[in-house]
Image 1 (cartoon, rainbow, N blue to C red):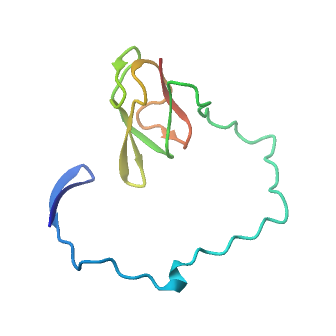
Image 2: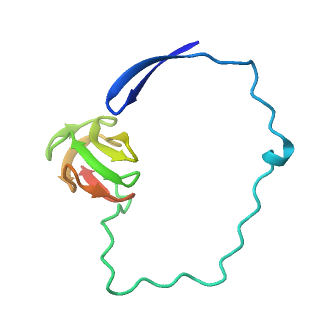
Length: 132
């Protein structure tokens, strides 16, 4: 038996999980085979129109840029500009599909810029903040 702590919508629950059976069930050979490759598209997708909105600012991969790993809503920002942070420190909380994710500092340094606000919708790859 294993005891686990699970948090759902901010409420922690202590649960006990019991493993039933000793081995994983065998997978039939037909199910274990990889799926067939999808056919190549016959025509290239149409180009975006010139009147479309400009894309959100996405990370260039520069050191210290913290990009959103997924699309979601900023719930809370835990840091401020000028604040010193260490690698692994929580920076902000994102909500996506009713799940909360904590975005942590990838490097140590000080927060140079915060590009989002509480309640903002962000896209995957959008630069949330910069650490220098």
